[in-house]
Length: 226
Image (cartoon, rainbow, N blue to C red; front, side, top):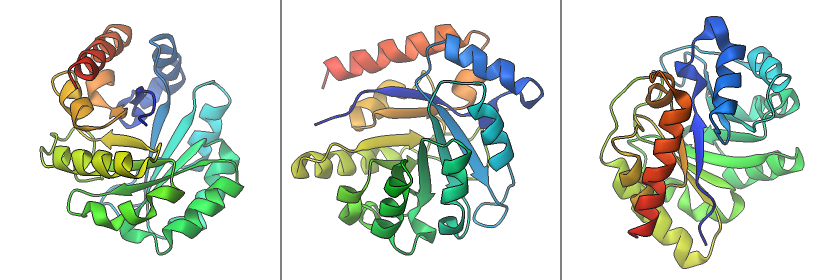
């Protein structure tokens, strides 16, 4: 019941002085979607980008935009992000009061619904609501800053979520976000992820096409070994 594997460059690690060029390069490199990190300085200790930037990117790319809202009171903002062009919206279980209601609202708006969990949050915070969702996002770093090292305990969460989704026959994506690079992408695939967010693992490399191609090869090898 698994979904297709997809690579999602996180533009938090892109060169913002040349953002349009960066987006064009990852399109040519055969990325599957763009991961768009939104931080408010409250839910996470940093401030990033928001609606105007997403709206601008929507005009220059054909790729799906995956808006990851690391913000308080996400219910107040999901509609404006969808209207600006987000195809998928992830909000965090830690600040989402009613996950089924939020998922219904996103579906009514025509967007995919995703719920994320931080490293300290148990999978039981989201798994009871998996049937309402299109994707579950597992954070493998503490959200708020790019360039952090992968937290190995995330692998156990991936396995637990994949096992439960398969048991229930749910075709829900599992996204992994944080410290994903060539060195560990096969391992996170083997643990159950199928959407791979990578920031410095892609934008920190000189050749985006080469690194994404190699990521796909390692994912395919891990799939063949399962």
